[in-house]
Image 1: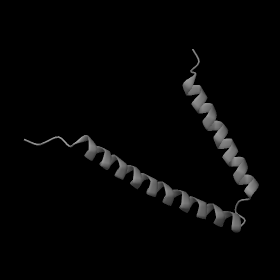
Image 2: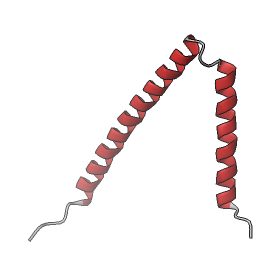
Image 3: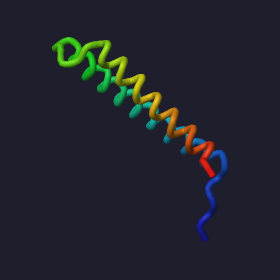
Image 4: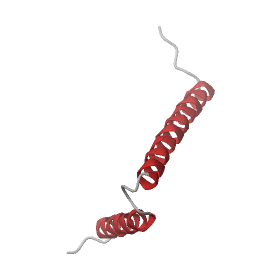
Length: 73
């Protein structure tokens, strides 16, 4: 018969998964930041264009979240 893992062991595994996700998130953000800096340095984008696009995407996301929280009848 197989024994059930202890709650403490399950928590250790969960913390390890979280640490892996944090590391992956850090690497993804670092790569994205490097790419954006290169685009800015090469004149492919301006800081203003980047800021405007980020604001636009944030507004769209806010609208989607608001619509999902308060669906129209």
